[in-house]
Image 1 (cartoon, rainbow, N blue to C red):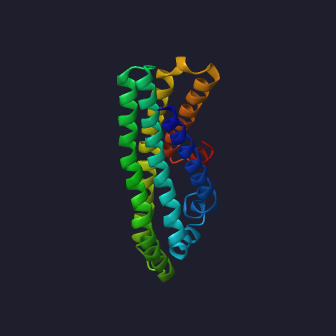
Image 2: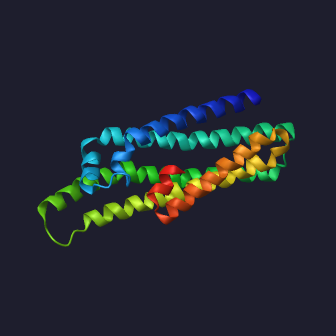
Image 3: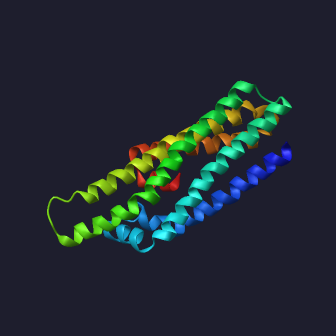
Length: 203
C-alpha cells in the first residue's frame, strides 16, 4: 500500500510540474496574464492545438490529485492512522472537485477557441454593439470560477483534512508544510473569487 502511495505522490508531482511549465510557457498567452485582449484571442486562434494540449495537461493534473488523495487515504486507513470519516470525506470532496475542474477545461478547449475566432472578426469589423467579446470573457470567467475557486477550494479542504487527520504520523515539519500548502490553496481560491490576477499567479 505504501508503494502505491509513493507512485501516486511522484506521479502527481511530475504531472503538476509539467502543468506549471505549460502554464508559464503556453497558457499565459491566452489568459488574463496577457493584458492585450487581441493578442490573447489571436493566440487561441493561431495555436489552438497547443492551447488544447496544455489544458489537457491540467485536466490530467486534476485526476492525479484525486489518485494521490485516494491512495493517501487508503494507505493510512488500512494502517489505522486516522479515522475512516475524515479520510473518506477528503476523497469525496476531491472527487467532487474534479467535476468542475474538467468542466472548466472543456469550456477552455471546446468553446473558447471558436469564440476567439468570432471575437477577432467582430473586433476587426469595427461594428458597434459587440456581443461575442463579452461572451468570451464571461465564459472564461466561468471557467476560472469552476477551476480556480470551486475545484481548487475542494482540493484544498481535502488536503487540509488529510494532513490534519494524519499529523501524528509525520514529523511536525511535514504536516506543517502540508497545512502551508493548504493555506496557499485557500489564498488561490480567494484570489480566483476576487478575480485577482496577481493573487492567482503568486499563490
